[in-house]
Structure formats: C-alpha cells, structure tokens
Image (cartoon, rainbow, N blue to C red; front, side, top):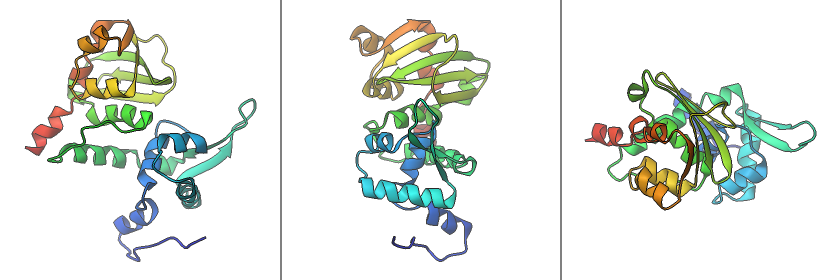
Length: 222
C-alpha cells in the first residue's frame, strides 16, 4: 500500500487536509451523513469513483478513525460503512462548503447525481428565520428512498428513514426535487404533470420554497 501523502505542515488545517483532502474523500463523507451504506451503495451513488480508489479512501478513513466498518446482525448480515462520532463532526464543513459554493459567480445549475446529495442540499438551503415558530413533518420519498424532513421551530431534522404522522408524504424524483428547490419549476406545474405526488397537506408542502431558499446566498454574494 502506498504511504499516505502529507503536506508535512503542523498547521491544523494542513493536518485536516492530510485526512480529507484527497480526491473523493469529502464526497464519501457526504454520502454517509444521512446514515450507513454498503460499499455497493457508495459505488452507485458516486459513479465517477473507481472501486480501487473508493476502497483506498475507505481504508484510510477507517485507519484514521473517520469511518467505522462493521457487519450488521442477521437477518441483514451485510457489511456497512458509517461515520464515527468524530467523522460526523465534518457535517458542518460539508454544509459550509455548499453555502460558499452557492455564492459563486457561476453556481452549479445541474443537480448532483446522488439522491442523498440532493436531499442534503435541504440543509444548505434551509432558512432558520423563515422556519421560526413553524412545526412541519414531511415524509420525503425520492427515487424509491425514504427520508424524514421535520421543521421544528427554526431547526431542521433531516435523516434517512420514516417519520411518524407526517403532515404530508411527498413522492418525487431527483430532477423534480432539484427544480422545485431551485425555482426552475413550480410546485403546481410539477403536480399538474405528475412529477410529484402529495398525500396530505398540500398547503404545507407549498411552504417549501419559503423554508428552503437558494436566493438568500446569491443576495449575500452580490
């Protein structure tokens, strides 16, 4: 195994980059923020990474204590990778990078390939001020994956999995979710063409563009 490259600099920033600065490293962290995944899941969600590079990054992360590799108990009995408690502390780093990118003069206009990455963008776009005093619970099903999206008085609870007694259940796909969040398609248009289905309080879902706002970062950049 080739030795890990190092900046050889005692600065804490350089030491952090020794661990997460390699290509694909932070994207692997992003893919594990909403919960553990199998190697095959990571390969599917990061189609640009080779199996060799992915395996190498996971070995490095396991050695450094960023990721834990374990076998789930029966009946699943599959090997999964999950972030350690220390690895989870990279979450605000990922979100701040996303906010910084939204202030770019040329922000990305196409959605990420990963379903989790699209759902995680809800954290970046979330406006705590607009959500203050609101309590909303959504079950979000995107491309056959289930997520919990709960707004609780200015805070966002976002995770992979089910939600108890949601105000509405939303079924859609990655492209439609991205288009609605980034204002390139209205909710009404998506409903009319069947690109999104809502079971429950449609009015509550109509508040999503108020609670998740990419425009506030573009204003800051101006």
